[in-house]
Image 1: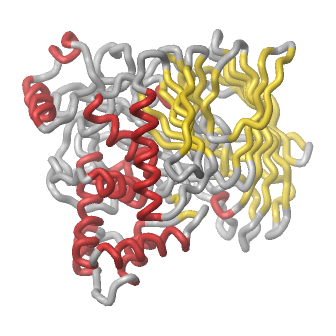
Image 2: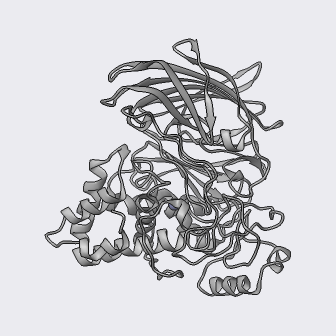
Length: 506
Ligand SMILES: [Zn+2]
């Protein structure tokens, strides 16, 4: 994800502290735009923030067309100190000796009802889970942000047709398996629930909302994961999920809407209940949905003709410029890290908030400053390699996806720059970076560290190592350690002295 620096109203800006205005002025001088969208003025003094506010400036987006109400701000601690805001919820450990849900595999067959008028989002999911681990498992951990943002109400919970009691813990549904699953065994979990989309874009609401004429539904589908706390003091992604070989989603809407999703549309039909469109996706670790009755679609092929790119935006947005940026990004990245892994790429204008990646889809908020659009599109598409193709625990090791994606984007754009925060370690989890410096440390310093390794190794060896990491972790979960090890293995040089001080926990 990338921090969204939104254009804001003068009135909103006026309430920022003088330091924030200074930062904004410096930002403009450096070619980027101040923001605001449920966001956080970079260096403003203000009350403690709720958990999931957006971070500081940076080259980034302009979020929602409508200015948010009062800006929520996070104290800007020094880079080295953990944020004051501690995660509210403690994880529930798996029982000893049992497999993590991340080691299992599941296919998902889902009916999703999206009611634009009432903001209702109803899900009926059949999840076929195979124990692909080497251990017994007696519980599944399925994550959905609907449990945190959507007032999720369970209607049906069964395992192989037998009702079970699901405990909801933070963003995780803890599903007991009454008979357990030995390695090689399978079970079908059915979960049906009602939820309600938020109606704004403040904090994390933009992940699960209907606002500004657009429905954003991120991680609405309960998915094999681990018990990750949703709250964090910055815009870090509190997610980690296993890849599914197949996801089929039938989406029924209350009115005609254009849908931009992770999947390929394989059918559409009108019915008494509204309009139903069917999508299928393969080798994905989420199924992201964006929808609007007002979208316009612009479709084009990638420069090599292999990928269909569809840009869905509201009227007045720069769809052609977005398509052009996406074409250049795909071509640039494929030359460095191999083929884009899906047949389609959806680029959807989101309701607001930040740029965001999903498998085969990226979200770009409206009204992004033209000087920032190219960067934002490149950063989010780079996540198709570092997040979608090679996953990682985004909460525990944000370096593995954010530093790698930002390195790739800036490599292609030629836009590396120095960090605006103090140099510090890169191996923390998202809970331990301040909102003010999360982007500057993990993305900028992290990307600069990778670029320094590239200079030391030479580009040929560096990209050989990066591609070896991708090949070894294709549609699986990589890690910061695996990434650095793969680079080290690609050169006779010993890279450890060059990076060890930045990763004391490894
Ligand atoms: Zn990102």
